[in-house]
Length: 294
Image (tube, rainbow, N blue to C red; front, side, top):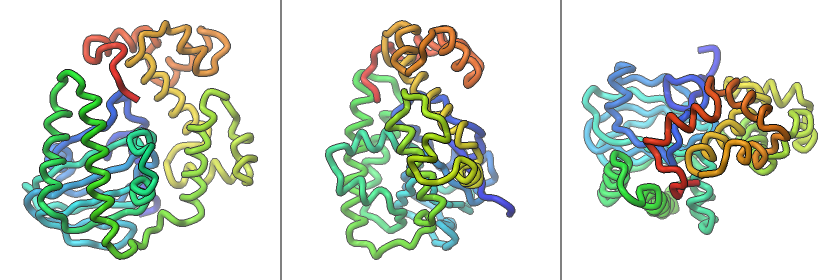
């Protein structure tokens, strides 16, 4: 294999357009499409939680193979290289969550968030199954206070996993290499200065590398250029605001740092293929404007 694949969701190119706090699906849902085999890949913005309820297989995490079976839990932070060979019929769930959302959920739990930055795979107590099942149930229906329920349940899951992980030996991970560290620091810098519309050169200067080096590492590890990672994050925030706030399109554009509504509309169309107004109209029936979501 010449390069490590990088996805938002396995087999899907580009950034996810889902406006959820998280995404939850059964292991079977995506496995049957890919013949129960997932080539080594990574997610540069996504944290994933796995639970194996029944069945078996092999997980490859940062080059190390691990047998997996019933009651196996996994917590995989962004940039962890992982792949799977599942036995047909394996049962369980995978929860995929933008790291920025997880950081919000755990804003007051620095110790838990610190443990979430280390990959872990381990046999767990069956109590975890109930939390995963409740998240799956809540995700599958659009009931009142759904986002708040998912936020609370995700926080509970992270705390539970962190407690289990505290007893584990350190997990050696290639996510500590210099290139990965640079990309993660770059992504954090984008989040901190998103609405300033900083250039790649400005970020590179802050990170004390050249723009060429930053772009090369970003493309090698994520499959996207440094500039596209900036645009991806800005477009994601625009979609969030259009979906979950009642603010006029022009006001959202100004809040995101655009000096002209037409400029914002042009940027949004280029990144998503739709105008901001058309995008909002498409989601308004699915998600109530003003829903409590971050």
